[in-house]
Image (cartoon, rainbow, N blue to C red; front, side):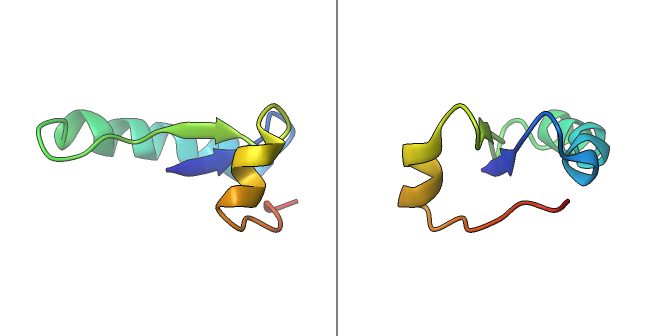
Length: 53
């Protein structure tokens, strides 16, 4: 699970890397992106306190 935000530069940089891993390992794993601004309850439930600036 990847917690992300539209304004997060490091999150945007990581997206293509995770997309490549997800495609390569599609039979073994699934990567899910959660937008912290649109899903505050889920973010809190998983204990996410911050995203990179």
